Image (cartoon, rainbow, N blue to C red; front, side, top):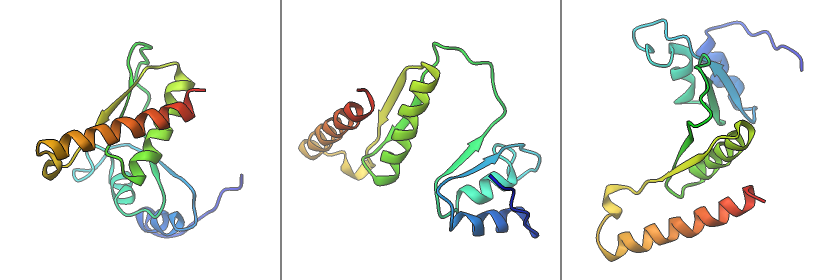
Length: 132
């Protein structure tokens, strides 16, 4: 690993670097009004990066009984996020809770039942690949 010194605004340079990165990891300080929840750099980069972004917050007291939670709607990015969630749960020996999310327009009777069943089958398949 070699540090890559860059000159310029952090958000601009990190976005540019994200075009050739597999994963971008940024910290969160929350020192400005706009980014008070995440931090101006992390929020500015996460929305426009060209690769997956991990925002590393300061560590909180780890409680083993607390689960890793992942939202899943069946999309490609959700599959990738779920893969990371499985790895983190295994790494920390934590339970994994998957929230299956459907857009409001998908919630209409039989169609909703079918989508829920499809998501359930996909979650079982993804779980089987990670829990061997």
